[in-house]
Every structure is written in C-alpha cells, then in structure tokens.
Length: 167
Length: 189
Image (cartoon, helix red, strand yellow):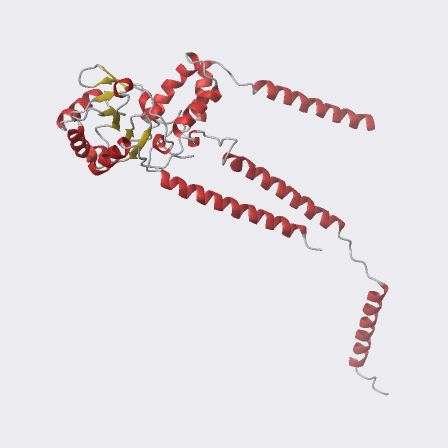
C-alpha cells in the first residue's frame, strides 16, 4: 500500500518536472530580426495615442518607429535594451508598455508584491489564531450554576401545578 | 494583546495613503510639463537632421543653421492649430528673416508633398519647408503631435518651445530669450 502511494507521488513529480522543462524550452524567445522587431513594437507604446502600442497604432510617429526598428536591429546592431532606451530618451518612460524597474516603476512592481506579502501574513495570522483559540469547556462552577437554575425552574413548575383536590 | 491584524491593516492603509500622495504629486507635476516639448523640458541639444526642401528638392540640414538661433516648426495642412498659427509664423519670419543669425524651418509631419505644396502656396509661406518622409526628424525631436515649435539657441540647445499653436508675441519672446542666453524654462534636473 505504501509503495503504491509512493509510486503515485513519484509519477506526479515526474509529470511536473517534464512540464516545467517543456515550458522553459518552449518559452525561449525567437531572436530573429523580424521576431525582435515585432516584439519591440509590442513593448513600445505609441508616443501620441493613449493605450496603443507602436505595433497597433497608425499614427505617423508609430509608423516611423516601425520603419526605424528593423534598421536599428540589422544595420546599427542595437540590442533590444538599447532600442528601448533610445525611444525612452526621445519620449520618456511612457514609451514602455511595462513599467521600468527603476524610479517610479519600482512602485508599480513592488506594490502588488507588498500587498501579496501583507495579505499572506494576515491570512497566516488569522488561521493561527483560529486554530489555537481553545474550545470553551464548562468548569465545575459553571455546571453548578446551570444545575441550580434548572432546579429553580422545576420548583417554579411545581408551584404552578394546581393543588390536589381532597376527596 | 492587540490584534496583529489591526497593525497589518494600519500598515496597508499607511502604504496606500503614501503611494496616493506620491502619485498625486507626480500627476500634478506632469500636468504642468505637458505643454512643453520634452526636448525643451530636458534642455537637450537639438538633434541633427537632413530634410528635402519642399520647394526645390535640395537638402536642408542642421549643419546649415549651426551657430544660429533658429526655430523649427512641425506642422501639416490639416491640423486646426497649425492653421491658426500660420499667420503668426509668417509675420514672425517676415520680421526677422533679414537677421543674419536667425533661421526658421518648417518640417512637414503626417502629410503628403502635393497637398503641402498647395498649402504653402495658398498661405504664402516663404520660410524653408522640409520634407521628412521617414519621420526621422520627428522621432529625433520627440514630437508627439502638431504643431510643435522648438527654438534652438546658438549653442544648439533647445531652450524654448511649445506644444500647440504659438503667437507672434510668444515667438518673439522665445527668440529674445534664446539670443540673450536666458532660459524659457528651468532645465529639468
């Protein structure tokens, strides 16, 4: 019985490990120039329109950036980080679809983590309190109080019953 | 013993209030900056550019205006504020065009050459107008719309400018400031 349980756990661990390996291998990004350009166009926000990426916008600035990125990759041999930095220099941090990891961007990344930690701590504290709060048990004094209260109820009931009628 | 949950809730509340205050300050600061081009806010050097002259196809380059105080105006035929400021720009150019240390260049943004030729002719625009077909100058200046005006001092730094229509009085004041080494806006640190 124990060995069957152990086998089941081993099988589960193997499945999880294989899944992780497959996910990691599959998630390696395509680094061809076309794929990099497409990725960068998604990562950069349109400088003139709210809520659109360079990939999605039809503004002249977005079209110009889409025309410029392939040259930056193939002719100027700029890395993705250098290309992003180039447009951030021109237009500011708002060019990034995701917050940067410095300055105010730290707040955007850090706040959810902070709330997660605080929420987790709160749940742990609450669960521990619930599990360690002792169940109340009656003491001898409590039982005595209940017994006397019951006795006085019975004696009140006896007083309410009509007296026996003599024959 | 005080409930630790209360302390956690208090800590969350303090963090939320602090972040809200910081964001409010950032938003109000950004609102003040939104009417100035980024290049001017940053007190940055104007980028180099090479354009095709709309009139004769010859090159208009940043080298030609190096060392002068020059005005760059991004515009097109269809934007309403561009049309509103056209007369002011014309009058401003007419007033200063004979000054040897002054230049003015219009750069077409998001428009076609044929339409712009008609626009330039109909509005009797006499300052050089450059074509930027790949939008390189637009990106290098960091334009976010039109019209946008930049006033570049003789040392090549963008010292004054505007997002939106400009008046002749504003242009005169910016030219004066750029020439005399004054700053229209304190450089962003």
